[in-house]
View 1 (cartoon, rainbow, N blue to C red):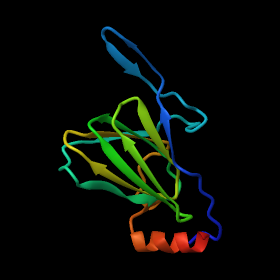
View 2: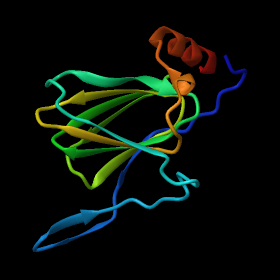
View 3: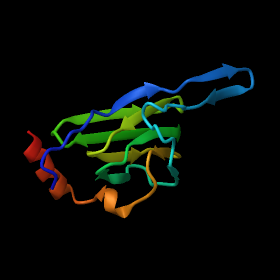
Amino acid sequence: MPESISTHAPYLFTLPGTRNGTGCLHFWENLALFPEGIQRCFWISNVQEGETRGNHAHWQESQVIVALAGKLLLEILSSGGEVFNFELNSPDQAVFVPPLNWLVARFYPDSVLLGMSDRAFSEDDYIRDLDYFGKLQERNK
């Protein structure tokens, strides 16, 4: 367990874009958050209503989460013990999830979650044990 853990709070932001008679175009170009660019994209669909995905934290990886379709409720627990709740129901909204934040994503019918990461997949970067994560929280209070 790291001696001192520094974490940033997750936050909601609006994705830039344009809208005209043929539809909407949204995009994300943010080198301040991901200086090396997006290293991995993933999407999750066909999840039963009320089921959750995520249920983990990362040591180093940051993510941006978007609801491409439907609605998602995100509950994020920081390593400092704070709880953040976000509702995503429009593809022009995104949530930045920094490292050391436990993410639980609750799905509604026909929801599609898009995740963009600043790192390639590494199982070693995952914290999958909520009890262990709770110990990190206790340490940081």
